[in-house]
Length: 435
Image (cartoon, rainbow, N blue to C red):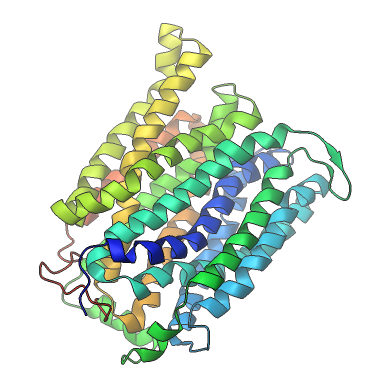
């Protein structure tokens, strides 16, 4: 039976997006406040950047492994859900414990961050792979736009709604002084609620049990990808590596730049990342439809040109403000405006890169392609913060913007060599496998 258009899949996509929402909520608060917690104990920005790669180190290995395991799992509740139901609640527990450990000692903070990432990263691959399991390839850009919008909404909830609560100081039973704690505790509760809703309303069992495709061994799939005459998957993965090498080198230090250079209090530093998140929410879904019309590759390359230009402009933000003697209000407004526009084009890149890889996959190895995406992005995220942090130590915060621009420019060149990843023009939109 054929189903026309993306609309019939919107409800399922939204429900799957609840899992992505939990990731966006935790990630945004993690990126904003963990560097600030570490700054209480560590003076070197390079060392802070190194510690911030802890989550990426776990992700580099755990996401591909658990994505592949979920490919091969068969259970009464599906192949992805068993992993989700264990790892997300554990993530909520350890996430809520982060500010308490930061109050205790550096060692306690690092231990809790270790446990948090050991629980959270295995959830990421199975959560994300739910979408291509259930949505035909023709509509995955639109669906990924919806899911990324929910992740961006979570980032806004974290940066705009929850982050300012870090300044609220109330003494409560068990919790004690709420300063720096409330955002993490509220986020942990929302993770649990979202997990329950995901389990109740997303039923993946029928799809997993009725497919005729056998799961491929991990090494077999990897050999196929690398050995294929069409190297498009390899070039997409390299592009992903380089644009995340730039983005992840910039993101951990935006909160410190906002506080130390722009002079905003800690409770407002999250608004900088929130500007990009707000743009992501508004334009992620439209970018999926635009990609459907002009092509995923073309839209990604256009967006890469734009973000290279914007990060280059940010390199001149501080001297521009000093040269013209602009007030803090005006300088912050300019900075946030640039980040908002950055978020528009960054959302187009992220929304459409995953569907390009999924288009090259089959149902049997969808998790492997999902894992490879995260392997590339997390490998970059491991390398980027200590590099960017060390550059900042040597040349100041401005240098991180230039570093980001160079990495994004290399990603643009890699995308020029991609030859596939677009859905066939007359692709059937049935609920059978569409690779």
